Length: 223
Ligand code: C5P
Image (cartoon, rainbow, N blue to C red; front, side, top):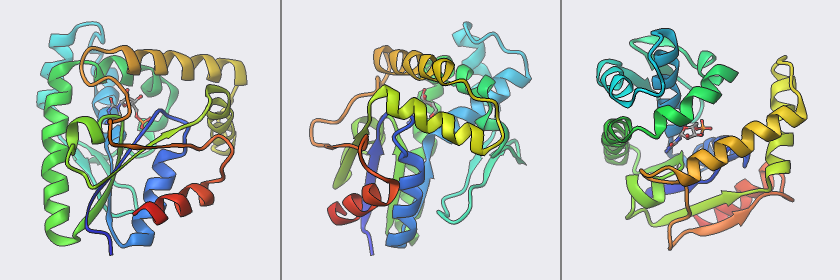
């Protein structure tokens, strides 16, 4: 069984969350999707009409909301003040709102503290956890024995998201999705607090030409 933390970072559309969940199930480890936590705060901001450009208002909201998240790779429980919002956090308005929300230092401080608590608690019981995010190897768990940074070209990532959207019955326009992928990359890699980047000691894995199963196999070998 896996001991310790596997830090899995990279931009969206690399299959990161799917792969992290499958790897955790295979290794009998816990699984933490940190992006879902930022999405819960973004959803709450949208529902409460908080001005996303007002960092103080977003920070105040983040202090009020209760973000609940499961760590069982077999089921995703994502709670906003006790209500399951696993589906609501995957909508386009949340895709757009999550970047400015996650750029607020106080939001990151609060969620990173929560993530470290969850990781410590899972390590205490299961012994191992796969953590999926943007800053896991650099900030959340810098001592993780295995760090992997997944990449793929913007075109491949946009195509994957378009396929995911149509499979979920959502209208998807490839050009618009590519523009959205690029906009989010730009915001995530240039923000002042914890920009998206590979840790110096991370293994970089380009998934452009790989299937999900091939990525899981490669990670499993590394783990
Ligand atoms: O992984 P996912 O696409 O759900 O993440 C949504 C957004 O949350 C990312 O685009 C990024 O802005 C933010 N995020 C972050 N740090 C993390 C995980 C996600 O800033 N550890």
